[in-house]
Image (cartoon, rainbow, N blue to C red; front, side, top):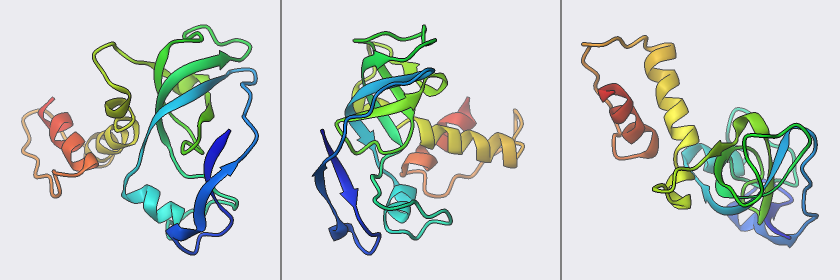
Length: 161
């Protein structure tokens, strides 16, 4: 299978499509055929080795994935081959990716793969910031800077909810 891989984190030019081994779903895992992979600001920092946690090389970026279940490992019962799903995982810029089953969420029919690949990190980050860190409560006013971006847009929607 093909994946975007870099042998170093010097620049985006370090990345290229390479032939790599197709992963297999182990116990408690799901193998997904990637249809869309989200990318955000943090992804670019990680890809260039400028994030607080540096990935080991060779590195394949991509944390937010939407796709079709190809296979499930032992003990996985909430999704099956052929199901449309989204997840947070690693190495999403590839044709196939393995995810921990507990992180795999079935997609409603109305949600496209592209839309689904933009949701997990943006919304979890917004929820963590607003509820976990900011302790925002009903009736309070929230000001969101950068509401045009992924996390900002999610923060506006979560705040309204």
